[in-house]
Amino acid sequence: MDNLTKTVTYEAKRLFPNKEGKCLFSCAYCGRQRIVTVPRELLNKTARIRCYCKHSIPVLFVGRSYYRKNVNLPGELRDCEGFKRIIVVKSISESGIGISLGGSKHYIKVGDLLRVRFQLDDKALTMLDVSVIVRRVDGGTAGCEFQYLEMNDKKIIGFYMMR
Image 1 (cartoon, rainbow, N blue to C red):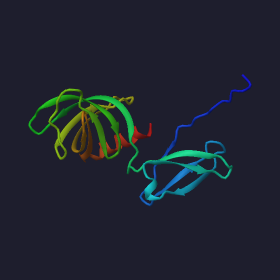
Image 2: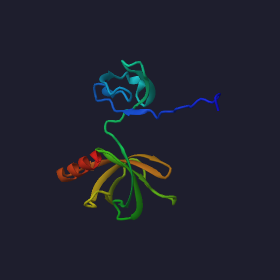
Image 3: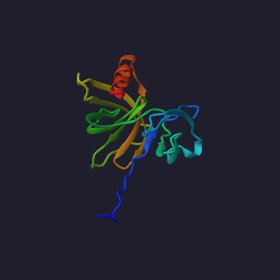
Image 4: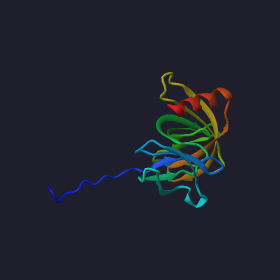
């Protein structure tokens, strides 16, 4: 047992730089905080930040405009012709949602305007019915941007993202 050493692995801390490429880094060891400027070539890549306390922390600089929360919310999708299908909302952000279209064949393509209805898992079980435009299709998943959100829906999603 004396020859064995304990290996500790850390998951990279996710940091979200603002439009100027700056983000707040907080050391997991000493709690010190500082503003870090992130070069564009490091967006969506892992790096290590050395703190003043000499510890080196692995970080991932996420190059999204908005934080994306992973969820698993059942929903319904309707296209402009009225075709309905059951979906699962897999991620949500202030600007859009990621959906899983299931294993069956689908006819969704980039640029399609869709109506998505899903229920949040908040205390009020809020039902959202939003218009989205498809920005990315990858097999059985699609990335959609909110086409238009009413002010109330923006507030609901904003509060939901904070919990």
